[in-house]
Image 1 (cartoon, rainbow, N blue to C red):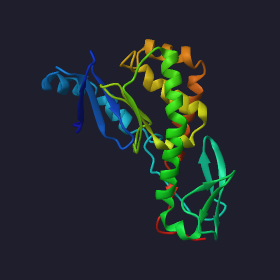
Image 2: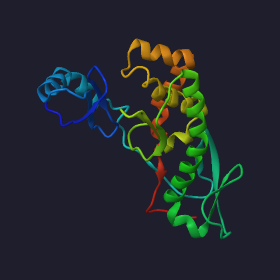
Image 3: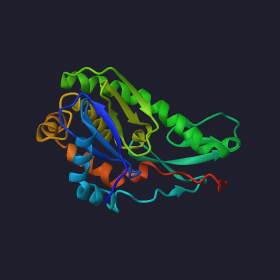
Image 4: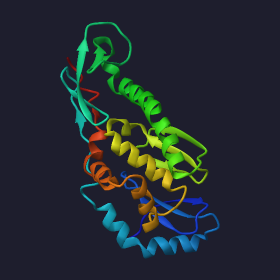
Length: 230
């Protein structure tokens, strides 16, 4: 079994492997790691990698959703109806349901992405500051990204990035992902200490973690682009 993988060098002492949901393999290593040591580490863990890549639950095809009035849109863990109206307003409006002008229906995915990213910035940024203070850590900057197959990221430069699709999840799940990434500033790997730190901040974190594992695919659903109708 041979695998293609990319390597991320950073300020860490140990080696680690991340399998993204697009089945790409990222190997995280210390900045002075030698190529032969990296190859040796990957080869040593090839059966673990194989098992992860063949996890049918995690790697399902993401369905698309038909775009019609009455469709439900997930936001902060709740479903809200979509109403396609005849008014000529621009963008997405929200007042207990989502409103979209008929003239905008061809841009539905683009418009919802823009709206969700804006809401992500409004809600996630303040939460990062609160949790960072509670953990006693400092980060460089925080941003919202269009990640395809991950929910958050903590870079070697202490930059934090979060998937805009998280804004569809319940607040407890958003908090979990934020705490998870901030904890990497204290403990690079997913050690027992890492999970203990998370538990000290969020005693029921496993509920949020399991929700994301079971429902993460739902957060990625987009509207069908070639069958839009009203």
